[in-house]
Structures are given as structure tokens and as C-alpha cells.
Length: 309
Image (cartoon, rainbow, N blue to C red; front, side, top):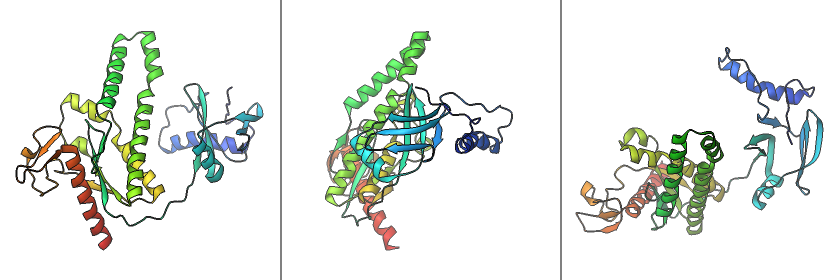
């Protein structure tokens, strides 16, 4: 079923909504290229053009062919509950991979921020996507094996350059992104849940600008840049806000070389990726766990300083 709306329709609300896209393009100075509509372009609907029947899980939607009633929609139990209780504003009808989605905005009240009793440090990395100061390491060899398999398959299909290879690439184009988002959601929920249970805040490693600060070999760049650490940080931030958990970004400089036991900083403290052994006091720990503990300590200090002022 194809639900298409154009600016030539008689409905004023939809006409104005369709003109919003071309208007913004012209305001941006794009005058040479003619404005056109794709048949599957996204379309905004307000409550006068699209109504929700939550108990029946159907919508009534206005189209150029008239109003369609009883169009079924679905979602998870949590999504349906949020939709029924907190939906606000207009909804967007989006076509993706031959399927139609309704994007609706919900406004959920934030929980009051509680005073943290310490912090959970989160170290982000390649071998382990996230490691907490409690010693929990999220997604190691298994996840990296899946990422390498996706990369190898994509490389082989791109090299073939046949119609069937291009068709497979098109089918897989968002699969890795969906996989990464799902893993990031699971990791973020686990970290926020543990912080909420123990009454602590979350100290998150700040990786902003790391591509400019750190020089990596090509294989390392591919591995680092193929994972959305920014997305993981965003997931942790919004889940923490909903749970009333404090989140603070921490400068991660030298956290992998600093001893979390005595504070001694030395490059020789970390002889390899997974090992940390302090050359001053002899303290030994997994390198990512040691870095996460340093991040937790800096987070507590930063929180105290910011709130003392």
C-alpha cells in the first residue's frame, strides 16, 4: 500500500508541510537544482490528518485517495505504552526498505537527579567496547568477530561489482548499523541499571576529538571508526536522565598509563593491551579495568568541584 501526498493536494496542512522542504532548501541558497518529490519521501502529519486508535492499534490517515481507516500499526509493549500516554506533536510517515514506519515523538518527565554515592567509571576501547570500574567487560572477542565478518563480506561484495553483489550490498547496507545500535542499547542499559541500583553516577570517557589527537595505523583506524562510540555515549546519557542518574564526561588523558592504586603515571605501566603492572608499587590489574577506575576517580573529583562552585 502506497501512501503518497503532494503539494498539489487541496488539504492546506499537507500543502504547507510539503512546502517546508523546498522552502528550507531555497533559504539555504540552493537555487540551481529544481525541487522535486520522491514517491517514497517522508511526510509529516499533524493530529488533524492522522488520528490514533490505541486500543485497536490502528490509525486513520489522510491521503490523496481519501482517508484510509483501520491501518494497523505495531510496536513493543513498552513503545505502545509510551505512545498512548506521552505522544506529543506531529508524526512522520517514513518509507524504509519497502516498509512504512510512523515516527512519533513522546515526552517523558525526567526523574529528579539524585546525589551520587560514588561513580561507575566507563572506559571505551577496541578490544572491549566498554569496561566498567566494577570489572565488567562488555563485548570482547565475540563482537569483534562479527564486526570483522561484516567488514570482510562487504569488501568482497564491493570488489565483485556485479548486479547481484550490488543487490546484496543494498540489502545489507543498514544491517551493521542496526547491529551496532542494538549492542549499544544493551551495554547502555546494563551500565545505567547498575549505577541506579547502587546509587552511583556514571563517569564516561570523553572521546571527542580523538581522531585528531591520536595517530593510528590504517587497520586500527578502520576498527576504531567503524563503531559508534558517540551513539553509545548518547544512549547512556538519555537512559541515565530517565533514571535520575548523574552522568559526567571525563578527560581520559593518561588514564591507561596511570596506576589506580598509587597514581604513578608511566608508559611502562602498560606493557601490552590487556596488562597493567605499576612499575612503582607493583599493582597489577586488567588494563581496561584500571583505566575505568581512574575515570571513576576523576568523575567523582569533577563532580565535587562543579557542585562546590
